[in-house]
Length: 123
Image (cartoon, rainbow, N blue to C red; front, side, top):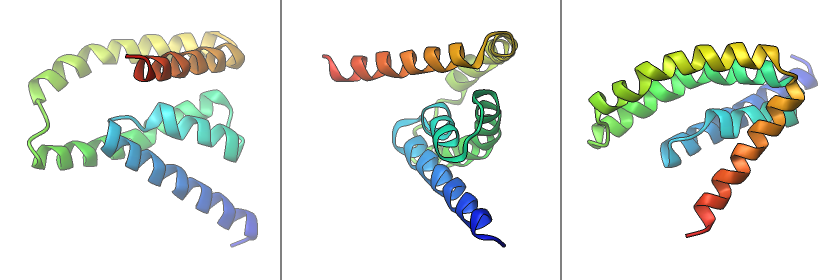
């Protein structure tokens, strides 16, 4: 295994660890952690970073749900009421992402993060 392969594996492991930590702690991890790190550290395009992040979220969400469930923190019915309609949103969002420029996606994502940060910081 070459030096670049090791570096890539190391960076991917850091992305995963950070995503898991943030998922367990705050309920976020994919879009807010994995996507920016894949773009900044590994040179992924926005679309590839999003798709890769979604694949990772399957594993992260399953383990996080089971772990939080063990603590009694999961309302399955509410989760389904949020998750099932979200499938339509995913289909719409993915179709939209394929039709707009990656720059527009990046700016929209950055704007969402900024608004989220402001909302968390300003009482």
